[in-house]
Image (tube, rainbow, N blue to C red):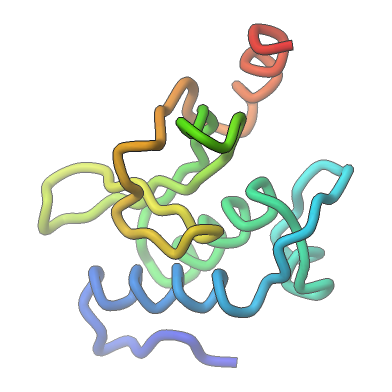
Length: 125
């Protein structure tokens, strides 16, 4: 399976990856710790699985990526991926569930990194 081409720019790769995850992963709640390989095999998940898979695919495509957790203005707690973009000289948020790159202003980052999710869940109940 090839989603991106080595000749693609970082921005084109990022757009292709966000779109692919959005179109190929069913949006269904999953009660587990997200795992990129399992998500790729099962092809389903919520924002956790979408974010973890997108970050893994980005890294495999030579794009630095991190997972962020936060809140959406109308959607409650959410996870999204944060991709480093050399063109914008910093990090750009991506929401594969909503097919957004960059993620819109309804996304509010509270923590960065999977290990920090526990802190967030404790704070939000």
